[in-house]
Length: 283
Image (cartoon, rainbow, N blue to C red):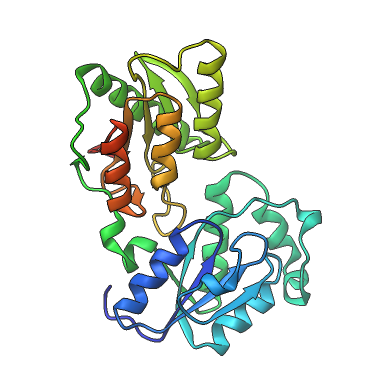
């Protein structure tokens, strides 16, 4: 983490990523304040640092919390279910910039998150990436555990990277499942967990959950995306669901995917007989 000044604010949605980033920053000796998004983050007691609950439409409340706690930089981390504009409980500050808020809701995730970044930076809060705080989370090249991909899986990995790169350029998704060169499913708004559950259901209907594991999950960053927000992640749950879908393994773009709870992922993959490997891929 490069010469930080002031408190780090973490605008925190669901999942383990905000907690991991907070722990890394605290361990490095940096003051941290969590802004936990209501309905996404969960119990504030989970936070390893001081925390404030904020509504996703409370623009003024979020800015005030950042400033009152001396936050000069902010990380945006964790999953948030995208609300409809009419569902947002906007505070007075949000109402004064209603056209900006409405514009955020149009288009794909890249547009939304880029607009959010620009908004906070225009108010003097520098937005940095989770990997700036915790660079060890970034995937490297090569396998994480004992299992290596077969020649068939290597071909599926290459095909999957092509597919996800094309999808990402259209701001659609960051993951796909490929088996023997055939695309079983691609990720859209539902997220990777739901994608893998869908593949497991598809294979169950076709009675193909038994026998040799085959097919791969591939994840990579969208081409040209702002790396400060929405880098794809994998965690232990990803490995469990890939195994439940009878996949041979998981391929992730090296330097483009965050690996949460790496040791647990390796233990799970080795025990379940799946490979997890970082794959170099030019953006």
